[in-house]
Length: 468
Ligand SMILES: Cc1cc2nc3c(=O)[nH]c(=O)nc-3n(C[C@H](O)[C@H](O)[C@H](O)COP(=O)(O)OP(=O)(O)OC[C@H]3O[C@@H](n4cnc5c(N)ncnc54)[C@H](O)[C@@H]3O)c2cc1C
Image (cartoon, rainbow, N blue to C red):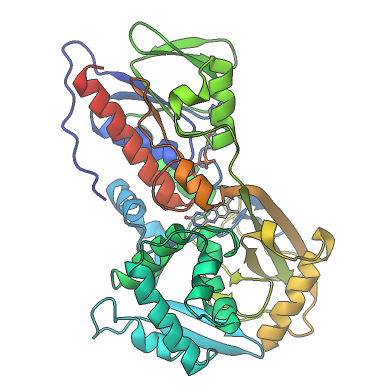
C-alpha cells in the first residue's frame, strides 16, 4: 500500500473535523487513514453493524455465525492486505498457496507457483498440469495472457478472447472460473480492462498474486468487531444506527443532517455509501449529481448478482477447503476451516445440532447473467452437481439449506461504466467520494473499497493543506 504516512496536520487550535458517511470497508479505511493523519474523525453508519456488504447471519441450528457470502482476497490485493497489516489483523486471514480445480467424477487439479521460476513464468508448470484442458488450449491460454498484458485494446473480454482464438473449452474451463468471480459479470459484457487487471496482477506480476486469502473469523466479527475496535482505539468515533440524510455547504466546510434531525458541522466529508445511496444523498442535499461527478450521468450502472448457497448435508463431502468447479453452474465451493476461530456460538458454547450435518457453501457470481434454475430448485441442483464432482456426496441427503441472493452485490465492470466511474476527489472542496464503485481501476472488491478509502482520505488531506 502506498499508504504514505501523511504528516499530521497540526492546526493552531484544533484538529480538522472529518465525517465519514458509511461504515463499509471503504468508509472504515477512509476513517482510519484520516485519523492516522491527525484528523478528528466521526464515522456514521446507517445500520447497527459496520461492514456493509461484508456481513454474516447467525445460524441457530448450528449455533454459529456464517457469512452471507464467502469472501476471499487475492494475494495481489496489496492495499487491502497492507491495511490489515497496519491494523494488526492479518492473522485473521489464512493464506492458501494452491488453487484447486474439481470436476466430475472426483477429479482434482492443484494449481500452484513454481518456487524456481520468476514471475511471469512462475505459474507455467502449474498451467501445464491443468490437464482438464487440451495441450493446444493450455498453450493458447498462455499466449493470450501474455498478449493481454501488453494490449491497449478495449471492449469486452469475450470478444477479445474470441479474437485471440480461445476455444469454447478454454473459455468455459479456464477464463470463466478465473474471471467470473473476480468481475461478477458475464464475459460477454465485462470490460477487457477489468479482466486485464485481474489476470496481470493476479497471475503474472508477482509470485503471490494468485494466492487466496480467506477469513478465519466471520465477516461480521472481523469488520464489525476487530476492525471497528482498532478504529476506535485509533480515535475514530463510531456512530451506529446513524443514517445521514443530507450534507450542505457551510462557511467552515459541511453541515451534516442526520435522519433524526440533528445537525453537525465538519471541515471535511467523505461519502462512502453505495452508488444508489450516494445519488439519493446528493438529491436530498440539493447537490446536482454533475457538480459532484461531472463525467457521470445519472444512468445507473448494471448491478451484478452473487448467490451464496448454504447447504447442510447428512455426511461429510470432501476434504479440500475450497475448489473451483468445472462445467457446473456452481462456480466455487467452500467449507469452513476444520477448527474455525469463531466456532463458538452466541453463548460461547458450541452446541451440536440435533441431527448430524456437514456444511458447505456454493458461490455463483454474475448470477444475473446465468441460465439458472428457479430459486426453489437451486439448492437441490447444486447438491446434485456437488454429488457428481465429489463421490462422497453422491446420494447424500440435503438436510437443510439457505439461499442468499445479493442482487446488487457489485456493479458490473462494463466498458461504458468503467469510463464513467468518478474519481474520489470531487470538484467541491473538502468533499470526497469512496466506495467500491468509484474509480479505483479495480472491480467491485474489498481491495477496490479500501483503495477508494485511501484515495478519498488523500483528496481531503490535499484540500485541507491547500486551504481550499
Ligand atoms: C455476495 C457478495 C460476494 C462478494 N465477494 C467478494 C469477494 O470474494 N472478494 C471481494 O474482494 N469482494 C467481494 N464482494 C464485494 C465486496 O463485498 C464489496 O466490494 C465491498 O464490501 C464494498 O464496500 P463499500 O464500503 O464500498 O460498500 P458497502 O459495503 O456497501 O458499505 C456502504 C455502507 O454505507 C452505509 N450507508 C448507506 N447509506 C448511508 C447513509 N445515508 N448514512 C450512513 N450510512 C449509510 C451502508 O449501510 C453500508 O454499511 C462481494 C460482495 C457481495 C455482496
